[in-house]
Length: 361
Image (cartoon, rainbow, N blue to C red; front, side, top):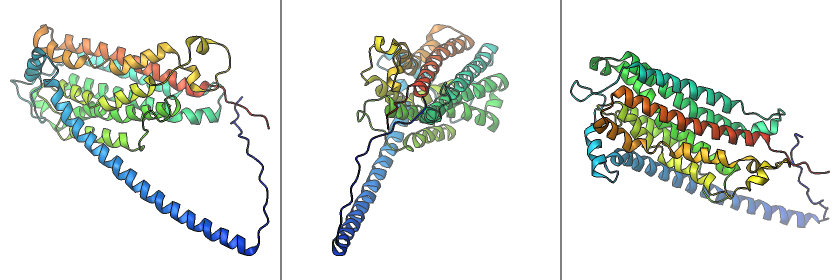
């Protein structure tokens, strides 16, 4: 049934008061309300400034960390490969150091990723209540929108990247404003993906997480963070002679939102598999989340980390062509993005499919 839960309230009773008693009470209540209002405004201002400072510090530190980490991954061979691979460009390319693959293997697998991510985005968006319950649909709406938006970011990035690989075939063309726009769309969507990851984590914390275990923070925290990283990309701060390197730096900037998502789901003590599999009505979305999908969620969100040391090693030591390297990396992305999409779809369905409690009047 699609009915909201009705909470019982104790019946009230009237108390007779004299005019003077009512006047004294009204003045006291108004004074208390005014005092509480002032305290609330002060507390809200302090909270806003604290959050603003936190997001500013996070943005600056994470951008610097993203530029530092490739060269400091704990092994001299990896660091040496990174030094040879990550050479700053500021969108100025040359024939000596610039490498940009134009093979069909690269751009066709990009387009395949776009189609795959778009399909998963549509599935998440359409994961509505089976009985068309507006209460459940409203509860799951944000999670469905954020999940679809993250996957659309992925698809837009690979669409712009595939187009660039297919049509910008000379160094001269790479130095045009047209290429810069396409590449900013490609890398910027990866960087801005942090926004939707964080918003997904926020929704998961609200409905599936342990209450009070992790802060929700203000709704604007993650959009500000994602916008900052995307702006850094567009301004050329994230730009290398091998344009593919830009994507890995943008990927590193996703670390805070990635680990936020992992923690909000990982800290929950979940019902046993036997309870989840039973046919009894599930009165909470938590009761519908199954272990295989939680594993997909964890692996999907953390699974792209090995690509960071892998890419410079493949470029410098593997002997593979750029087409081969890109095809391997795109195949890896398809698996991890697929795990993300499938697990997010499962969470969206859990939000839309649990049994509403119905209380007796």
